[in-house]
Length: 254
Length: 251
Image (cartoon, rainbow over all chains, first blue to last red; front, side, top):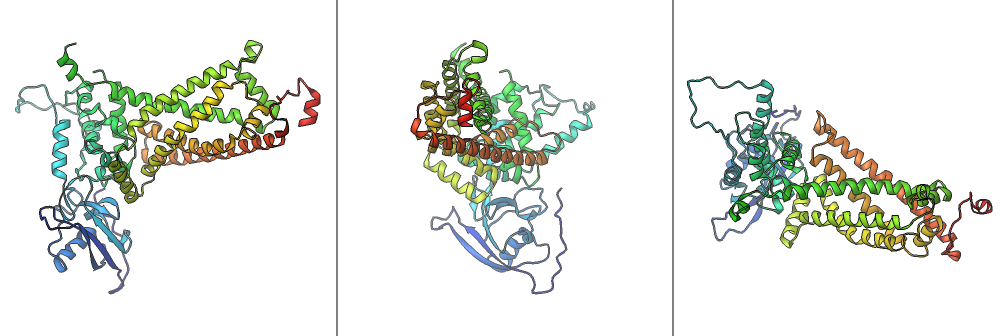
């Protein structure tokens, strides 16, 4: 699921499109900076991703364009941005799937660092501390000489499936609820708690989960607009996880 | 419970509100669709519609019609609408900033389920008023239901513009609402949620179009009868089994 489906493009030199790329520019650190769009012309190449395109712009046209990337393989989640209004990972988006004119903007709902770069890390850490997205075990101290308890492969698979979330922030940018109400924990948060809920190593009860999720900033705030599910670059089953937690929280004894 | 315990204990209200909003919505959708089938009995014949109307007034069981039963049920439906609307209000954008954010978000995303939510907000808002007018009329004139009485209300009573707009508003709102409700609680999605969600989406539109066509045909039928009956508006229909001459004359 993490590989880019490469289509063979048959074209000779000069046959590629000239792409018009409009990039949002703003440096919030600089008092004189006015948010605006800059336009660049780039010749498309075979199997070109947005990540490659942005590097070409930075290399050959404007070294000051800010954008984030680390892994260029859809694993680190840092290159998420709005591409023609929709959140996508730049490294997993092929230019050939896009129209000739591209509008690139930073993910809405996060603190802007500059141009296309946003501080998703700060948001995610906040969410994680609020929801306590880690294993809660009553055991005081683990004896590392003892063998760990076994886990059923089916359960491990299920946990792994949800664990694939890279916290790229696309689900928050795609969520009308999160855009409208800044304190909504979003699909990323609810999915992470669903992951700990099915983990047998986590001792938390439904009542414990209800404490952090049983609010309108939590699962009951979700209006099922389904942007998260449709735009998750990792294709996580987010709508099902939210429905699952909603059912559990609706029935939870507090 | 001490004040501290009270402050620390999580509230069950968000859960109750979410459940009741969904449950009232589900009941109202199912009621509204059933209502449409009953009202459309006029497309079969005037006698069929007459029979349906008297049945809801309890005639088959109680021996004679009691229109107050209709009033009572209408009060019940109105109270469900009030509860549902009150709970749904929590979801409405409330400030200029929120509307602005939502407009931009929807314009950017071009995502049908998000856009449909906006449709649901506006149709829901319109229904506060339209459903209230319709139900007020029924609660205080429950006996004005019948092949002629309803048609006169629609045509001579100038209710058809309301009903025509309300038909579209209510069908859109109900179709989108029940689809969202099913996905919201994760029902009927089986082992292939993506595909099945798409199927539910298609099914939702089929139902909406079906009820719109049925509704338009039904409203058209009442308007036609009301138009032809305008000079005798107020006269009641007597079914053909009571008045064989009437049957020959009117059918």
